[in-house]
Image 1: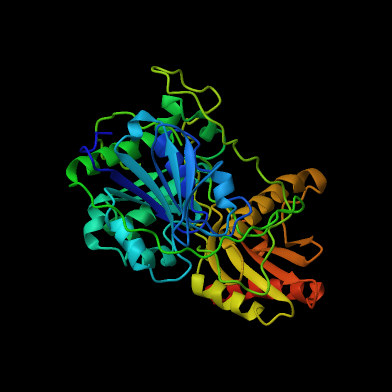
Image 2: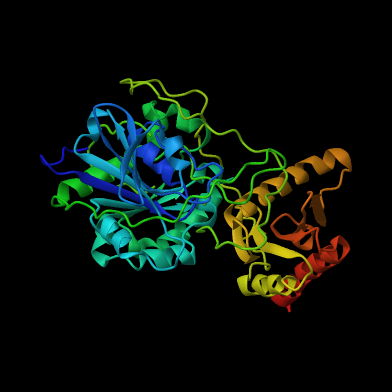
Length: 455
């Protein structure tokens, strides 16, 4: 990136809803895993990464104090933090700062949040590929000054979890239609899993979208005047720690992704290539009981090596586009699903329900209280696993419903018309809920959707 003027810091703001991949994007910009996921946390303060003589972590408390702490994890576990400041000796960070800024719980952006975003030389909004550009995200972004759009980028995260090129193409077309007016560019990011540990590899970093983001940052920074200092953050709500239960899986509040590395000097190329946490509620859906993927370790990586050989572990050869499973599916009417789910709310012990597009894990409609990003993603994965296992067990690939029982809840999955294209998830509490009644209700919900769309 081009050097900032002496005495001024060029600012990149990375924002988004809870668990939308902000940390992954920051780490991709810096090419080092510096920011940790918010494992076990329901909230996360603003984090500012800047150049320093040595690695360090400083917390700015809600009462205005400034304290040094051992590491980022210690800072995230405190409940009195308004902002966390992380210093790194990466030389190309001199004159730059990157701010990770989570969207607030309320629908209205605070004045200081808008001021910090408006002062950015580059504003990046993170959205999860499977549910890209939700209505709540649009409502946040429309509150920002229109002048910010000339240096704003939509980063579509977790695209490496999409199953086919057809899914990616479908999302790209929809974002071009619905979100293009709000951003200068849209970049598809692949920064999860083993890629986090290989960002020092130039080929991996480029394919992950890092080079495109840094090129855009260079373009915006070169064109922007020196920014004024960002205002001090307003006191944040206390961070509540949540104890993880290794079995089945943690509560449906999920972390904010992995961690960053170095910004090389590159030519500017304008190339195009996972809801805020709900308010506290009496019952929250637990995730489906299935294996948790291993998180990438947050350890320092070596400096980039010129002409590094491509990693043989990654194969990015495009696969032939498969037919879109939902292209001719009549069961795709969101109002029909919303109406069916609304009827489920009257069930005894109701906690949450959602309708999911199985191939892309997209949430079609939802009711109740849950982290629907996580619930849709895991239920789709779980259903696909069962579809793969069925032939070996019974030779039959048709699924009507699946019931997962935990000590506190019944979790039901119902395929629509015995196909894996769409499915409904219903969560009911064992205390007050009735499994037989719930199975009948979710069956009727699926039939009502089909009858509504076809009738």
